[in-house]
Length: 141
Image 1 (cartoon, rainbow, N blue to C red):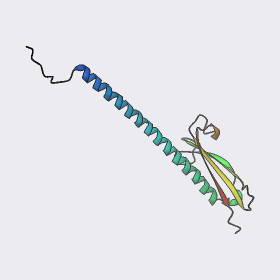
Image 2: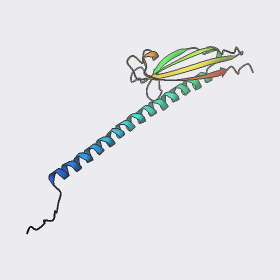
Image 3: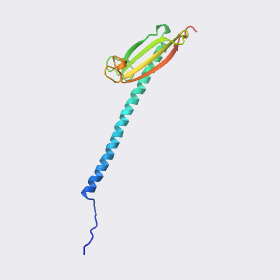
Image 4: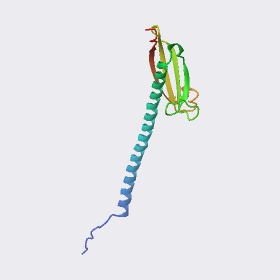
């Protein structure tokens, strides 16, 4: 008569299968983490680009209405004008408002980042935001 032995552990195959499943799960979690970090970096850059555009609009509102003109510059990540360590390309156009109201100008500010040649031509930027506003000359009111 044979006696049945009770198993008191795991076989090598069972351990290898368990480790394989665990590694697959950890790799999936790692990929989600990397995706999350990339999304966070993009969101941060987008928020700062919007801030740079709004900052330029506020600067233009503070200028004398008769001196408003189109232009461009490069800024660092904190929206400070920079010749080195530039990150954003900022361009703005000033035109008469399309409805032809007197003493009004339409200001269009575009901020771009990331891309080969982005800092010299905004059309080369792989990411861009654009904000448009109307500035009214209040000095004659």
